[in-house]
Length: 414
Ligand SMILES: [Zn+2]
Image 1 (tube, rainbow, N blue to C red):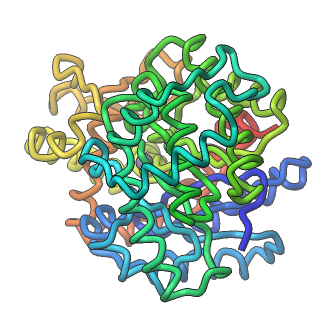
Image 2 (cartoon, rainbow, N blue to C red):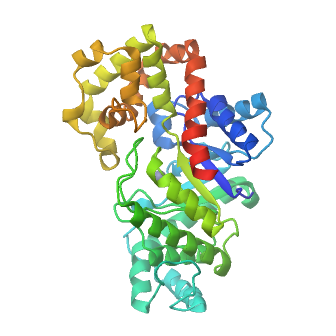
Image 3 (cartoon, rainbow, N blue to C red):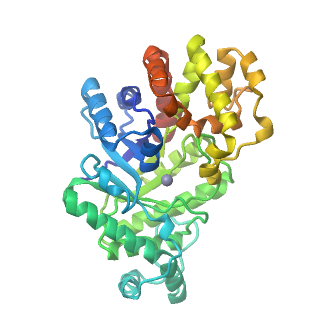
């Protein structure tokens, strides 16, 4: 199973927007922008909303048959490891093997020898086309990088082989992710990691490194755009080189775990991918859930009441909701409006605070991030929440489609 050149990971916490999401891909394809949708959901999300991996498969299959989508589509077991992969084996055909927690856990000598041999083949100063600064390796550098990443690669191998045994080699796509860590990988790191994955026999099709800058949940990128563009360019160059020289699948491409809505890097990404003529996978639009909340606020009545109550609940459980996400949110608590203030707002005004419209003066990134991590509260509301989603399905699904089509797909891939 091969992943197409361009693919986008979409999240849908409550599983009601599959059709609205796919509608965006249909419209993009009509405009000549062909992107494979990949529905992704992590074990953590499943636990929090009390859903099952089979529900994501059903959502994807239903959307595809309802809309008559004839293109490829995938279902991603997002951020799985040995402890969590089993629930996903029968329903997913894309596996994001997350080995970030194994980074820095020491090296395995046997693996290091094979790795040195493979790297020697391309030389210590490999001629990598398109790099902004040449990669220069030394034996010492390779040993250091191997020491840092080899345990993670070995673990990826164990998980990969476990999946392979259950599904058969040709029946799934493998991603390896190392993004949930504090330190971005350098092009040298990435080159050595890819060589190590090749030595480990993992036919990795997408690799998710940690990029430079802040990728906070549901809000824009924070960091130096020029630095990002250079690092992204160099990562693409290294990935293309590794696919060619290490015997990895020719489909190998970068995967950006964006944390959704990194609007300001979309233009540099679009430009760089075109220039390098390479593929890309980007996970975004976990904010489909925020479109639901903004949509409910905007319709007024019981929708607005629910959105206000959700905000009140989130304020009540601020620490509890924010702690698990501490490394990927930056909420300015002084910018959070009081409950009284929120009560005085019209539905449209409250929705404007939540919607990710950087041009709108009412947009409040702290409110947006807080609500983004508060989906557990909507899960706790159970039927009351899902029946509101049914009641206001039309305006919400239109907002979901428009968000994915205009703010993501067309900006990244057109
Ligand atoms: Zn990730």
